Amino acid sequence: MRNWVIGVAAPVLLLVAWWFLSADSTDPFFPPLQTILVRFQELWLFEHFQSDVLLSLGNLFLGFVIAAAAGIALGFITALVAPVRWMLDPLIHFLRGIPPVALVPIFISLIGFGTQMRVTSIALAALFPTMIATVDGIRSVSNDLLDVSRVYRLTRKERVLKVLLPAATPQIFSGLQVSLQVAFIVMIASEMLGSSQGIGAMTLLAQQSFMTADMWAGILLLGVIGFLVNILFSLLRRRVLSWYIGSRRLARAS
Amino acid sequence: MSNRPAPTLPTRNRKSTMAQQPETRVSAATPRLDVAHLAKTYGSGGKARTVIEDLTFTVDAGEVVCIVGPSGVGKTTLLKCLAGLQPATSGRAAIDGRTISGPPPEMALVFQDYNRSLMPWLTVRKNLVLPLRHLKLSAAELKERCDSALAAVGLSHADNQYPWQLSGGMQQRVAIARALAYRPEILIMDEPFASVDAQTRFDLEDLCLKIRRDFNMTILVVTHDIDEAVYLADRVVVLGSRPARVLKVVDVDLPAPRDQITTRSLPEFARQRTEVLSLIKRPA
Picture 1: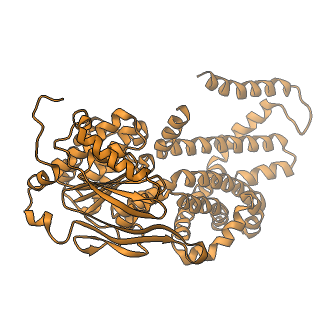
Picture 2: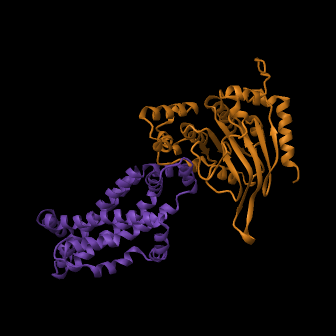
Picture 3: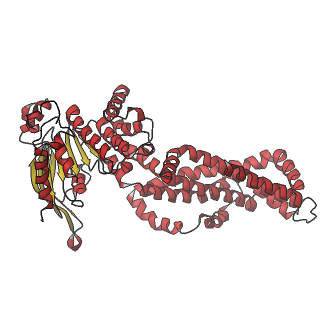
């Protein structure tokens, strides 16, 4: 309870400090927070909400969902089909060593100007973390559970959907979390590079035309969106993995 | 000593009447479970490691047979061969004369590590249901099987809990209930009571005997506890170590029904126990 209060109070205090410390600012790069918030409201809440905010969020959501579905499916195929595993294993070991964000330049260079191309690059970049985590998750399923599945003669479908998938879910979710971050980065980058629409494009445009308050407003919006998306994700995780979270908490307590 | 007169019939004679099956089934030429010259070697060439050298024993229908031996003797490997999880290197294991080449449909296995053999994402009841799904039972039968299995292990109240919310002994009872709901004809248990406290252990041993009585199962238990083996078994297969081989098959002629207090205080119990113990202690 006390942690929760501190968690809310700290950012609020920070905002208050920012508000007062920047109130008389004449520095063109650090306008008063009040000015930023006014521009925030004018820019994002009404005028550009539909044309830019929803567009960005739509791309992010679509790209992430495609990446998640394809990543999990490809992870299963890689882990379960031996020839595919032999083919992809070296590649996966190579990719595992590279931070996912380091792949972003590749996908940015692929970005064209259409929405389709942007969604494609978001999906492609975000696919690998989930795929690798899925492969790792399936490989780390304990032999005991596999033996149980065989002794009780579960069908192949049951083994995949009722044993391997849930057993690998904790690791799949770690992968999805990284994928979400990568998708977010690529979304913004794609708009900054090849587009005239979207939050990223608006923010970069503001910076290039010395509308510093607008730039700050854009960055603030991105922060708020990132924060909310993460909350949504952890709510989903808490729901799907309640058994895992509960068992871990109990194991730690004992 | 208890007030009731101790039954004089030895268990092995009593078994055939209790099994309610034709006498021929029990004394038939093909035993229920037949292990003949079974051997298992891992690896090959210079690195080959023989875990089981030459095992031969049989289990008749309705019998409880315990396998005892020093730890690390390859008991778990033996069970994996019997359950069709691993192929034998030579020799064979057979059920009703059919060589085991994959997990047999009439067999269930209770694993040693209950906390790694139950699905932590499923509630107790759903753990029981999972192996039954492919049997395409009616909803009523599915419910009846789970209800009666949970009642048999005394866990009717816990069916909506998750395994990790239960104590170790209760988790092992869930694993046993899962096997019971599967309605196997042959139940194999790998050190099923190794990691529970003494009181729970007694309860689970009696549960094992009750299952045999109520469900007419053939039960094979691997254990390193000699008292437990003598208490549970109609016959005890004593293994010698590294590589595993049968030292002796000891017939246990203790009266039934067995009871933790009276049976364990019988002079005959002490004698059988000493016989098994001296076999194991004897330098090979």
